[in-house]
Image 1 (cartoon, rainbow, N blue to C red):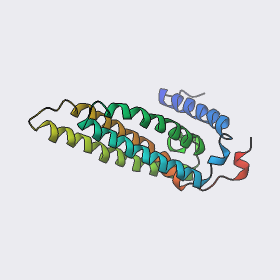
Image 2 (image 1 turned 120 degrees about the vertical axis):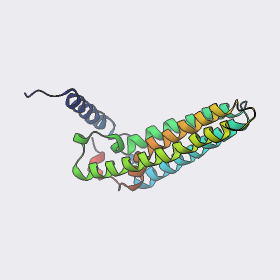
Image 3 (image 1 turned 180 degrees about the vertical axis):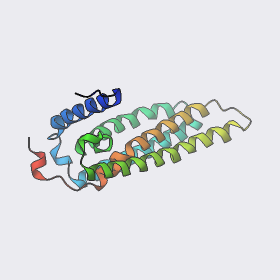
Length: 179
């Protein structure tokens, strides 16, 4: 066996682990694997992100109620995100060796869009910090509010590839859902 680099060994490990998990979860939630249901998950996830942004804005004005609203946002986010990942086969973050050429192209395109979304959305709280921080007055809420907005922007960008693939992929073939 030729010498392999650390990166190649890691990619091999990632691929093996991905395929094991795919085999384990491929029959979970069969009723949610349709395009219509995946799109519902994407819409609900997007609404959760809108709520998270609203929580960041509320935290700018009210540090008593604002942080308490972050918990419900997370309680919606984590099950929605996990369900979308399961029913879309985690194609947005799958290792290269686990995908065919078409899937690689789709994943890379979705990842590229996700990176652009992350960069653009993270500019908003950055500019908020710059402009609000430069003004005179009490800005004790600004770091917390901006932190929530940055975390939300990163979550949106990180979820974008799976959301795009979940929205665009056709319904799975029936034989793909059998054990």
